[in-house]
Image (cartoon, rainbow, N blue to C red):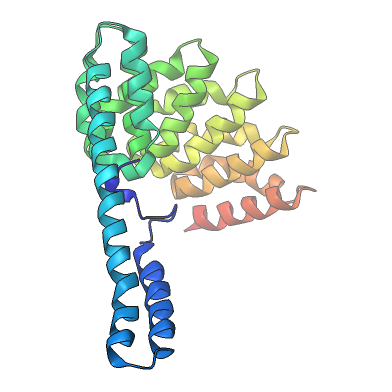
Length: 264
């Protein structure tokens, strides 16, 4: 954990404020109960001084740990072992959007001689949501979608969701995935196309085909993706009209929303 985030909760809100308020109220209640002013001042200041000291201790420990952790990670990125490099990259990528500033550290490994390391770097940078590097990542995503590794293809769909509208070059691979035998690949591809939005227009016909199947989850995502594409998905209007009469409420709602968005 970075020392900069030591006192933050999962939503990123500072925990110092409620902690300080609680200490202030306790200090105040202790001080009010004292009979003399020196004792009142002492009982009010002592907890505050203890809290300040505690903050210094925790931030100091966090700073030291941070330096050790990142020194180890930098060594891992320079390791001669591709497995170590890939594992270190994955560790950094796990920070998600809160670690977007770490993307430049990983970016040089997009040119690594090992294919698994290159993909680990591309996937991690996508997860870090640093838009400055998205253009360099998309070709790697498209290549992963065209491959035969099912785990990597699933990760590629996740990466497309993270990149969003800039992932237009990955659309051909997602179209292929929409017609895959595995239902998991089909609905993940439809979900990814939803995030690509207008750039997913070439997939409109394949998404219309997905609406006609028996998979309600896939149909729901397909309808949502067509709505996100907008007027450029006009070719799917007949399929959406049929889906608007679906016995599945979620499919019906998404199809109606998509028709409204396509109509403009």
